[in-house]
Image (cartoon, rainbow, N blue to C red; front, side, top):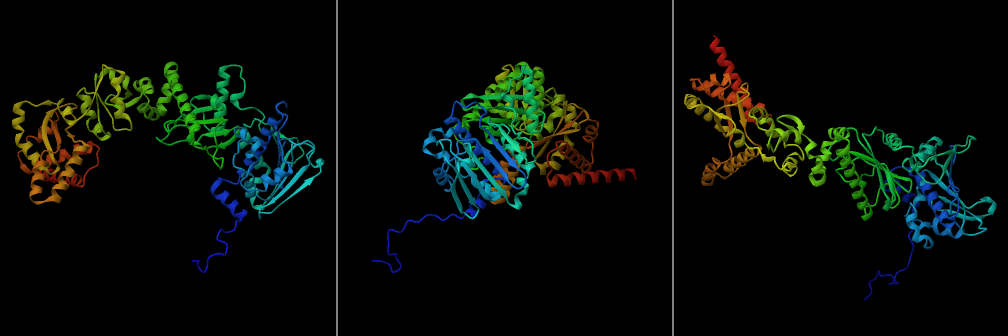
Length: 615
């Protein structure tokens, strides 16, 4: 049965897509290319690939005999090369068919690695700044080939015609753009000169620029890349590379690491940043492919931990993405990333072995980066862990120095815990490291791998209180009534009260309370309130076993000795609350609303008591 609206030809009719060229150019400008300025990079790239093909055709030609010439006088932009050129058939096949590239032709398919571009849409980028593209080309493959002219317009139309050979005496291609008025920003002579230097400063073929004022062409890339030059001494080479890094990257490097991976034809430098950067912040790197600048923000070429360097590299075998503004993630890029990471590790090892001053300056600026690396890299751990700075009860010092005076190293689990106990632990002779910062606790626990004679343990309240001296029996009995009232007043905070002696004597009280214990008490409290009834009673009984805070009063402190002798119940209660509030403030942890209220109330009550006493 045939439906009434079925077509008479069930097989359908083959049709071709109709391409809206203006719409395609708009798509390129908004979603593929980052800026209209890439038009010049694409023209340079096409010229370089044409020269590469010409050298393949004429391998005996002297180096530098073929080049690229740029011209911009404000009315036109022209790029001319001595490359392989195009025949009339090539023009119809490659310039008039969107998405096809001469670099995909069968005769050069096996040589694709020699070319920068792979996608055949680069010429379309010229429509970002011009409404018409004029191409005149003559092929070097065909003797006595005529010149061919192609004119493409932004509305999608084009014309092709054959010219006399005299129209272009030598093989090669000339591309001429007549800029639109709104593209002046990108096509002024000064801007074309700047863009040529930006994209093509490391190109291996000679590139010159003429602004139409009558002078000779100015060399865009007068010298080879700095790492390809010869220098009289290693020191001169090092200084030249550092100066180049400063010129290109905008900072004076702490040191310069030369990079050389022959397997992928990669050469360049890594410049060590002179100051610290936020953890995880990855700087972009300048990556050139066969001399052409691909990206200034290629962060994928180095691992995440290497955020202490910025690189300038030129590679032969890395693949650009379709926009040619970033690198294609493949096995080659992964291998390059691993190899460059190994070069950075080797530099750190050399600094540790032979340049302690450089190592000290590096670690001062980038200890966090090295810590992140040491967590996962046993070699770096063994080399640098003893030299890394940590916050300790002896101040900021290296683990090597700290372990010399403390056979047992205690480490806190948070910054808050360290701040609570640092002064008391130091006075008691305990060696405590602040393990609350990123990577620190994990790294300190690995110290015995480097120094087997040193032991490491987590610091807990019991460890600290065990090092505080008990008071004599008579003092304990005399203070019993006060301690009982203090425990009753602070029961709402799940806080026990004890009397000890410890240094410094100026500290009246120490509040020992871990974050985990507070969380456990809060969880138990919420569960008890939500359950109610029999389960609430059971949970309430279990809650008594939850970790409790401990307010330790210092018998050596004159204020505490006065407080424990108070007979008046309300004043004793108020003084205990005030001591708790002061200890909570010194712990530097966030106060709960009830604690803030207690501090205010106890202060006012003590003030009122003092005023009544004076009257």
